[in-house]
Length: 393
Ligand SMILES: *Cc1c(COP(=O)(O)O)cnc(C)c1O
Image (tube, rainbow, N blue to C red; front, side, top):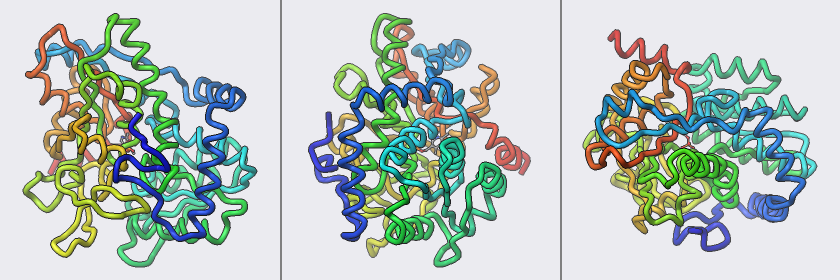
């Protein structure tokens, strides 16, 4: 495995937070290490993954999409069929079970687009925990429906009105809450990002994606795929999709970053292609910066990919050339969004459309007897309004 120790992946990762938070994160790290292979814990997690999340989900041979591309067989790992319509609940269900066993009574989270906030609110409701979700005030106004979903499930949504009123200020507010309330409060991080132990822990809970897909493709085709393709925001669905193939050298790994308006524009979220190494959000990783080395805002058509930094293991996989990261533009993603809808009757999330567009781009390099496995991280119902407005304009 690529993790060296103590949350470092080569030079990436670590735990760059104030001492008082570090002490609490060390307690979470120790607890997680102790519990993750405990048979009781594993059994409880497996039960909720089956009955609450709806796993295992299918590995679907997208025959029409395959024919349209005219290259390798395309299989879709259907995370869109999970409860709440995406992969995020794989992680929130895992972490809420940790929080419960640690004796915590309250969850906090931060969210940009609101998808992780909703996945946290759901498990808080399910397990009878108090829950506060921090959002930049700008996001509160843009994401009214997700705010309402969280409130319906009993979560308190706090709009953070300072600074740029964005995700960054929401993260700061969540850390401040944790400093104040760590005795009874658990901070539930939504992607494979942030200080140790979150990148490793989130990877662990999302690895169920490749654990299933590997078994499914072996049953179906009697062999491993030639490549695995996933989209990258913070990197949780991608690292979960890669995990069980990392030690299979014949399987290529591809991540699709939010290329926004293009790599030569200033409007992109292509952190791994354009970023510099920097400490951000408690970890050492690639991050988009301006000429002075200050973090600069990211942009993507897809809210879930619109993130300035990247999970540290992806930074490591890029530098060691185990995985390749390619930027997909808004327009390429929009085309893939429509193509999968038309050919398969499956409307993909805009995030996942980046992975589909990358598969379409890679297809000519492969032959008809080869296999590309694409993670469909979520369903696109949440995006149809936005796409309608774009296509009409
Ligand atoms: C949040 C989200 C993503 C991006 O997050 P990762 O941590 O990179 O997986 C991708 N797809 C969907 C559907 C999402 O909701």
